[in-house]
Amino acid sequence: MTEPEPWWRDAVIYQVYPRSFADSDGDGVGDLGGVRAHLRHLADLGVDAIWMSPWYPSPMADAGYDVADFRDVDPVFGTLAEAETLVAEAHELGIRTIVDIVPNHVSSAHAWFREALADPDSPMRELFWFRPPSPDMPTDWVGEFGGTTWTRTPDGSWYLHLFTPEQPDLNWDHPVVKAEFEDILRFWFDRGVDGIRIDSAALLFKDRSLPPVVDGQPHPFHDRDELHDVYRAWRRVADSYPGERALIGEVWLPDASRFAKYLRPDELHAAFNFDFLGCAWDAELMRACIDRTLDAHRAVGAPTTWVLSNHDVTRHVTRYGRADTTFSFENNLDGTPVDLELGTRRARAAALLSLSLPGAAYVYQGEELGLWENEAIPPEQMQDPMYARRGHSRDGCRVPLPWSGDSPPFGFSTGSPWLPQPPEWKDLTVEAQAGDPSSMLALYTSAIALRPRSSPFSWTDLGAGVLAYCRGSSFACVLNLSSAPVPLPSFREVLIASNPLDGDLLPPDTAVWLRLSSS
Ligand code: GLC
Image (cartoon, rainbow, N blue to C red):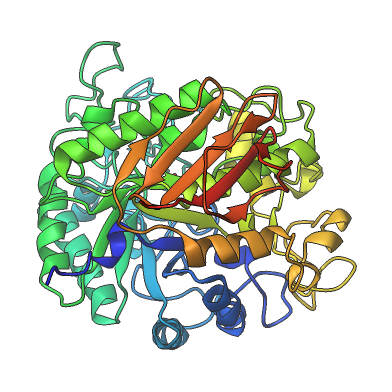
């Protein structure tokens, strides 16, 4: 008998962005009561796990990624006891829970930072990156949201923050910081969580001499070698618990071999595939990206992951409806023309792609409904701190989900949602899609139920503009990225098509799963 694969190798993991999932108390902000009330939706969709974006006490300078206390829950979301109940209720439905840990920085409201700020001689300053008063900033580093990375304290000192001034960076050279995060992992594993999503996992360490960023030299704060010992220590913590607890890194790195180092057998279990997320809707580029991904992961024995969207990037219905279908923070495409019908058609095909490639697939809340980016949020309602610094806001992908009804707030809340929902989403509510076999929700539900899990992957060549591969000997996925219909190979049965077929022809921007005659 062979052992079953650990769950994290081929799971479907659904990202819950709690502020925008469902609101149970009418304040317009989603909460844990809202998640609990809709766990059925997730069970019916068939997901294996939920990843909860931060639910900790926070001043919300960066929507909860500014954490004031890693061992509690913000009152806007609920209580710690309710988080424990949520984990238990999800388990009863066969759904695992992943929590989001943010090790690079804390909130400026965190007790450590408040103590450090209050007294220039406080030893707590050692836990951060304080530098003595001087007329100039210690470096001219550019922050992750753009802008400078140092803020002056009332006593004239400087402190470092790679994100907003409300997110002071921790000093990971300090043993107290290392011990604290191992303890935080234990805190959540003790409460039954099944995994940890590690925020900004390739940051954390800084070159102590604070050198400038110079091309071709080791980066002073990205992807430093010291990180790997931390993740080895975290892996030992995860492995000391029963039940296959997983560590999943948010690692944005262009170099596939540097990326794969985080996934060596004694480090993280998995990491998000942002190369795939940013890839253009183009057969050759997609195939090259998939090959790069498979090669890099094979080299370290780690499972691949497939990600189309998350709370930081433009929703893929919108991306795939633009002339330029790539995504990167450097290339701001906000406001460029979007064909939502085309984007939706491609998003349907992309779902069949990401759910049939080998490895784990991530679904960002609302993509199962075919939501698009809300590009019509008035500037004065923008909440994302990136907006002021880069002119691009992530709010458009964070808009509260439409559950039911014909007009906002679409059953999300009895109050006024914290970001406006497009009225056109009346056709995309869960209620409107339930029972409609041609809906995005039906497509995701059937695809998750039918997806191939562990069978081996191999490419099949069906010509330019077409991606085709088998999983084992009886399953094939064919995706037409060209502008003309293409003939399908011989098959026994169509399992799912993202759009209706044209006889035995596969129309453009359409994907199909086929059962093959396995003789
Ligand atoms: C990660 C999060 C993002 C957050 C940033 C700072 O990239 O996904 O939402 O703003 O880290 O914590």
